[in-house]
Image (spheres, helix red, strand yellow):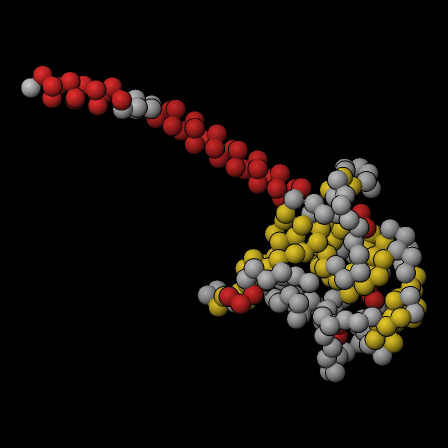
Amino acid sequence: MKKGKAEVENSGADAAPEKPPRRVFQEYSEAFVVAVVLAIIIRAFFVQAFKIPSGSMVPTLQIGDHILVNKFIYGVRIPFTKARWPQFADPKRGDVIVFVYPVERSKDFIKRVVAVGGDTVEVKGKEVFVNGKPVQEAYAHYDDQSTPSQGPTSRADMPLRRVPEDKLFVMGDNRDHSHDSRVWGFVPVEDVKGKAFMIYYSAQRFPLIRWDRIFNLIY
């Protein structure tokens, strides 16, 4: 009987003391605050999620695609300056970027970079020419039932333009149904938020999930 009593006493000694409710609440609160802070840092400096609301980037991006944008690659803009740090690359031709819409700065737009500062760009019969050479665009989609844009030129033709330094000329992949640089002009490099790199979820409406698009990389 004494041996049994000793075993019971030892078991009680090894058990962790029960934490008071206040201590438990404090630990959960601290974990929650840390998680929120980490989420804010990740969103501000590394990756941000966006939802595609329109068809201007079809077929590359569909309405209802949820995408991740790499904010780190172009560097994070330092407040009150045009500088970015750290900066591993500049936006280049072919990149799919998210940026502040120049016409209504409360909105974010997503388009593809067609030309960068110093380039010339022209559209003739829906064919895009950069620096006098036609651009091979496997991602571009055209619709013969297109209608002219509300800008000074149609989507099918645009006179030669030179892209100013530190500016970008962007277009949607759905060329006949995209409101882009052909209409409202150039995007300041400083207004670029990041490069789109992956679709993490896709559904035009729940529960019709497009499983074949989930985790697709964006090119």
